[in-house]
Image (cartoon, rainbow, N blue to C red; front, side, top):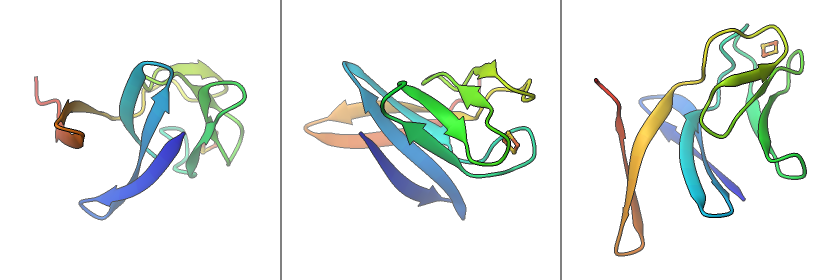
Length: 87
Ligand code: FES
């Protein structure tokens, strides 16, 4: 399941796949098209030219060579908190 949200004026996806919860940028690193969650194949897919990315934002197939930006997230008392990884 995936939830779209906006942070700092940009679209993001919060995705749960099995035990994994991840928050990734919903903008493709190739040419900036929207990213959607492909539930059947359990990967992130670009609507532009079909690049695919892992739940952790790493490119799997297609022309994108850079990873999607990923937020560090924590779930505390059922609430999800996210922050940029500044390391
Ligand atoms: S913009 Fe993502 S594959 Fe083209």
